[in-house]
Length: 62
Image (cartoon, rainbow, N blue to C red; front, side, top):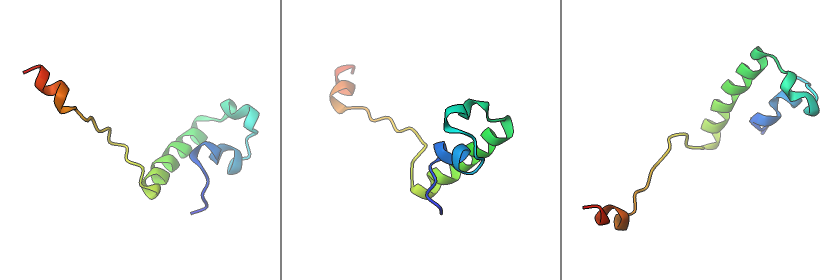
């Protein structure tokens, strides 16, 4: 738990300059995507999209 945002992993961990993040290789990007999953799970961020259907709109189409 070092509170590193997923977008900052390339700069902080891999020491890639912030102005040249696009030059990161496939391996680094893969590690960041795995880290992002763990980060979101630890922070309690829900990745399942929830769709709320208003009752008014639903009853209008009956």
